[in-house]
Image (cartoon, rainbow, N blue to C red):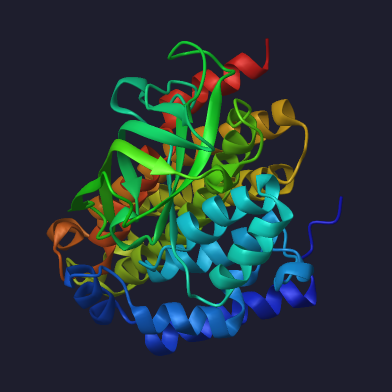
Length: 378
């Protein structure tokens, strides 16, 4: 297997890196996190111009035909810049779900709008009682004439406050924990009966709890086959997990650079603290953890495009487990070696650490994916 990046992939990374260095400074990012929207509308338009929002979509629908590896490379820069825009939720997860399970007409309608930055989506797939289990769906979908009526609640819907529409998993037949019987629906934000309880996340993003009260949608709102929605939903979430792994690696690499620079400049007893052997050993541990995480993220991205669900689950959950543990080590060591400055809001290290913590808890934490990974080996 060739692990070298293509010229196009390297150019993609360079483009994103230049944009972040020029237009997405740390202070600007802090202001955006405190703004009502929670991210930059101007940056979102810029991503569309750069082609990032159309990256994973087929060329016939206005996309660039990019792979999960291409997404991983972009997400590494997203992590380094602590980018707040909803690339993960709109492009990778929701856009990927429509690409893989939507009708041709739906793809023609929605994918070009996503690529042009005209449409933002959020995936509403988790419920409070189900923790990270996608098959635990109590939200009900009842046939109504030629359409459906949805009732239930979804929790921690990432980037929901800015979404124009939601991709909602609802149970159309069967008991709450059954694998079969889950359907996927496209629900407009302004539909009657839809309400959101919005809040900021610890890393500066936005999320919301979504309540559906007898929400009426037409038959065209159904994505894919009725009662067969779990498989495409799991695939979309797996792609999202692979993207998160790439983002975490970008943050760990940035944390290592920031910590190493601090060790070289902060002096104690008249010498840089990087001269102390104990801190050198800790820095070496951080470097090893980041490099091993990079390998795991590449592996997850390679298999995220696989049609073999078991193989994809094995690679993705293995990466999420290891990277969650490694991120904790790197984040804690970086904060400790920066001393009191490591937790100050004015220093980027604290924001990197917060984001790493949120990544571990998003789409299944390390403990959950360790269990999922173990079940793949039986």
